Length: 479
Ligand code: SF4
Image (tube, rainbow, N blue to C red; front, side, top):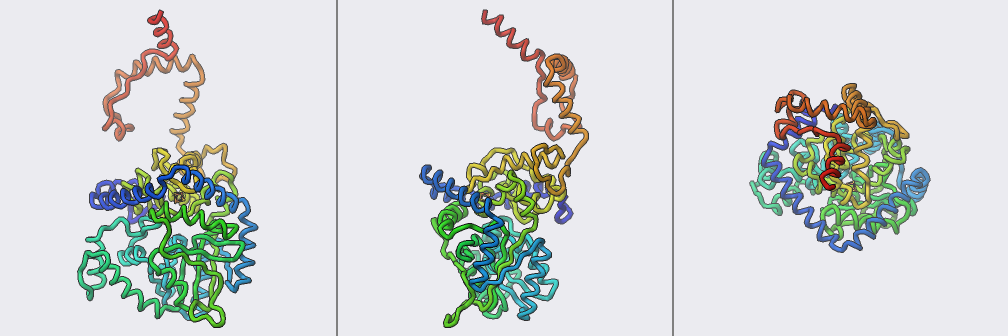
C-alpha cells in the first residue's frame, strides 16, 4: 500500500474531505470546467460522431502498436531525431542523464510532462547535480510548493489565488504581494525568461507521435512548450509508447476531443509539430532532438485485450472533472502520479496492485467518467476487473496483473461462497431467510464490524417470508 507522508489513501481522503478550503477550490474549478466542456459539446450528434471517431483512431493505432512504433522510429531517425527505448523509469532516467552529461548541461527547462512525473525525473536529476525547472505555470507553482500535481492538466488547481500569492511572496521575497492572476503570471514569466536563455536543454512531453511522418505533436496554452523546444540547443521529448498514432490525418479529431474535453477550449493557443532538429539556414530550434519512448509496464497492460483499452487515454482529464470522488478529495489523496478515474485504473496497472490496493474500491461505479471520456474507455468495467484481480478471483484475466490478490481475504471468500450456496438452492435460501428474519430482531442497532455502515443507516429489516411465499400471498389477495 502506498503511504504518503505516513498516511494511507483512506486517511488522505478523510483529511481532504475535512479540508473546507481545498473542497471549495476543487468545487469552484470543476464546476467551471464542466460547464465549459458542456458548452463545447452541446451538439449531441457531433459529440457522438467525433467520439466514435476518436475511439476508432486510438483502437486502430493500438491494434498496430508494435509496427507503428517501428515505423515511428524509422521516420524520426530519417528526420534526424534520435530515438531511445526505455523499458523502465530507471532506464529512461539514465538515458536522459547521459544525454545531459554529454552536453555538460547544468539546467533543464521543462514543459508539462506527466511521464516525467512518473519517472520522478526532477528528483533524479537533482541527485546528479542538474537543476530541472518547470516552465508550465501550474507545474512551476507546485514545484515551488514542493508538491505533486493534483490534476493532469491543471497541476495547481487545488490552490486558490490567495494561496498562490502567499507562496510567491514566501519563495520570491523580492516580488510584490499580489493576488492578481495577470501579475502573478508576469512574475513567473520574468523568472522563467532568464532560465530559458541560460538552460542547456529543454524537456517536453508528447501528445501525439505520428508514425507516418515522424512528427511529435505538442499541445499547450502558455508558449512555454515552444520556448522549451526551440530555445535550448538540445531538446529531449519523453513519452509513453501508447501515444503513437498512425497518420497525420488522425490528429485533428483527437486534438479537437482533447482540448474541448480538457479545458472547454475549441483549440489551444499553441500546437507544436516537431519534425527535426534545426536545419541549415534556420535561425532557431535545437541542434539536437531526442525522443525517449517509455514502457514502464505498458506492454503488460497492452497484452491483455481487456486492460489494453486503458492505453486509449489522451490525458484530457475530463474524467477527473466529472468524478464525484475526485471533485471531493482532490488529486493528492490518490498518492500516485495519475489521480481520478484514469489514475484508479492506470496507476495500479503500471505500478502493481499491491502498492495501490484501495484505488479500485474508491468508486461507486456511477459511470460519470465513462459517459464523459472522449475515447470511450470503459473505466467502470476496468475497475470491476481490478477488484477481481485484487481479490485474486479473476477467471477472465488473460494476463494476471502485478500484485494480483493484493486484497485477498479468506473471510470475504468464505462469505461469498456462503452467499452463493444460499442463493443457488431454494431449500437453503428458504432456511437462511427464515433464520435471518428471526436473528434480525435480536441484532443491536450498531455492530462493531459494520459500525461505519450502521452509524449512518437504519438497521435493515430481513424478509419474514421468502419471495415465493410473498408472490403466493399476492396471488391469494388478488383472487
Ligand atoms: S480516461 Fe478518458 S476522460 Fe479520462 S483522461 Fe483519459 S481520455 Fe480523458
